[in-house]
Image 1: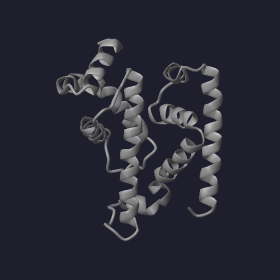
Image 2: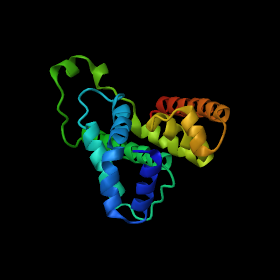
Image 3: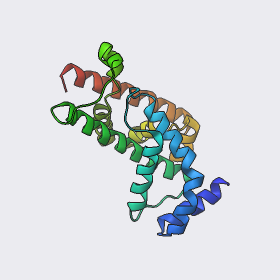
Image 4: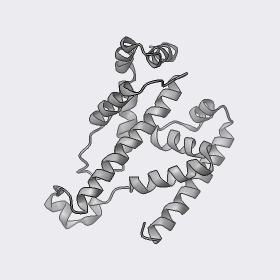
Length: 191
């Protein structure tokens, strides 16, 4: 099905048409799953969430949202990538809370023997840093979300934001440098 038809269904869904929501899900499912799988690649092997579960959670949250407007397929997937990021961060927070005296986490003997296997990107720290970047420069934060979380190419981001590919490339480099510096400072300060 064409991007135009998907956009029409998304627009209809955002106007409250639940039938459109049901019709568009099979058409967008694989793309949502790709975004979720991309995010899970950086997680440890014993991560308890699966891409399918994340997509279903994202869909449930999307259905529960009111008044959203998706003027294009790209807008929808950018929002979905942000939502998937929220799901992963919420999961990381629950997991970290459990490690600090809550529920015990099941690990294998192999993981006990090699603590490096337990390490995954600190999604909470990345989320906080990205929120900080959003306050300083919302466009750079959007570029990070589209590139890192949604897996958009620089060309797709440029088209989405209505700016040149060179500008996207430059801002992507600056955003990464800013995030790296912020995360390093936080790690050094024990945050």
